[in-house]
Image (tube, rainbow, N blue to C red; front, side, top):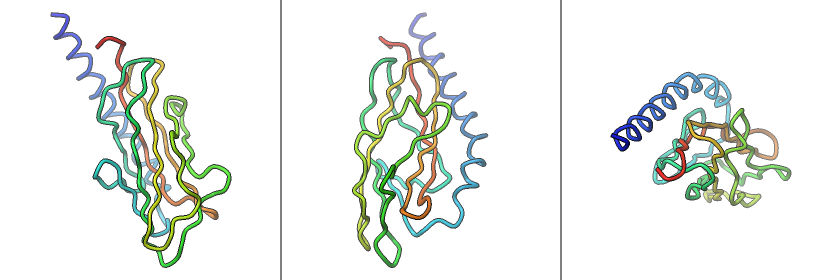
Length: 155
């Protein structure tokens, strides 16, 4: 019975997360217009500006997820310089649950790419999400949502 309850709790949390993200997507999509020619990939899938990337694993409270590596591909006609201050910014109500584990190099060469990684380190159970903005030297390059689910320790 306890195993069934844990399974249903996870299913309910994931359903709540997906519904929450469905309503958040239009807000993030508003920032996705007029961005330079870059593409982002993570775990073999494209992460478009305005989209949502879901960390596939449930993470126990007090633990850290595996690092998710995002690759920014330069598809423009010149090199792209990232912001000198904070090239990757995580914002939103749940931003404290997500951390840039490894920042990107400051320049994306013509036809090249740079990587950065993010981890999820929850302090409470439930679905969590934040907005990731990759800042170029002059304007944001990519804006998307990252989401994850935290479960009680021992599950």
